[in-house]
Image 1 (cartoon, one colour):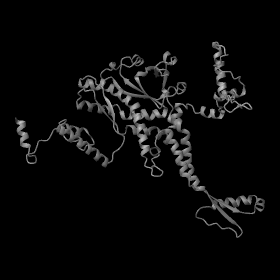
Image 2: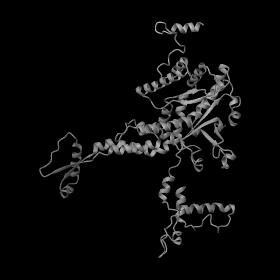
Image 3: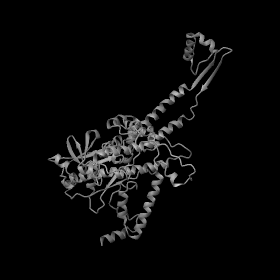
Image 4: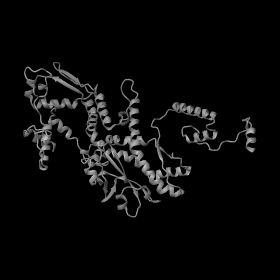
Length: 497
């Protein structure tokens, strides 16, 4: 379509009339298409530069005003960018079969959930430990780890991932077509999360989201139709790799740009370059034999037969026998910069996929005094963005269903809000952990000396901290030993009184 437009533009001369010209009469409705066409033609039209009048000053207004303000673009450049469009969800799945593409898609998903998270209640509601244990057990029952991994991993494969929360209700069509209401969750009704690939689902917009640019949900589908059933957007949690411009959203079916689309050409170049390396190593030596070409040409088939024999007997361990007047020269192709070329291709793939090259290809950092600390820091920032912006909303909605459907009826308590706290992504060494614990212990001692906390508070904090080294001790304070504690008798007498 773009090529046809360009051919028509450059074949038919267009009169340069501005759409904002004061001489232009107000158009009738049927003239709008013609005006838009002229604007497009003028945009792509290649114009010749105008030169200042002879004798005019360099900064004269008359001469400056004659220069064109829009710079020309070549048709080849426009066609190259125009060809980088939506490749289709089926092709995304086919390309994602490649090991490198699949690793680029699923590596951030695995790394983001590797350290896991803590579910806490911070609004002052007293929650028993058994309740929190039941919530953690529900994670296994609903396959939470698998759902989180596929939510990000397959979301990067397709550019969009849609999660539907399956609920057992009397009329599913009425329930899902209307906006989500947390109070409608019945005890024991939550069945789990369902993730739908984008080729099984169809976006549907209402009149406001499709026609009112001032709407909060402009060009955001109001419903997603699955198996003929409308599902309101509030029932879904949607992951997109990025937010596209409005003009591109219908082309991508209101999703984002997939990772396979971004890196398919780069991955092809990288793997072809890697496959070329052993071929270059085996064919880098070329032998040249000086002969009398005039005499050799006359031999015809005999010359060709001798060359085939020479090639057949040629190897790195044989001996060549030549005449006294013959001269053989061996030319070697240098492979010095081959690893640099391959590494450059790998870095392009990693950059487009937003994954460190050391993580994607499992290679150590290269370069002078390279430690990889900078890449690691940026990598953790990207993973934290995934955790906060994409995984946390999914978890909050999941636990909302778990608490209303399972936990609250089981313990006969009111539903309560929870908070998601992601564990740090950095892995401490033994020395760093010892230093951190010493700092914590010194802080406990300082707080105890002021009377802010007592020994039982410190004991509870040590049990709750999995890195303290004391997380397995009992909550009860031990009885003082009279033989080792001189104040044991005084403490016992005080307790008796």
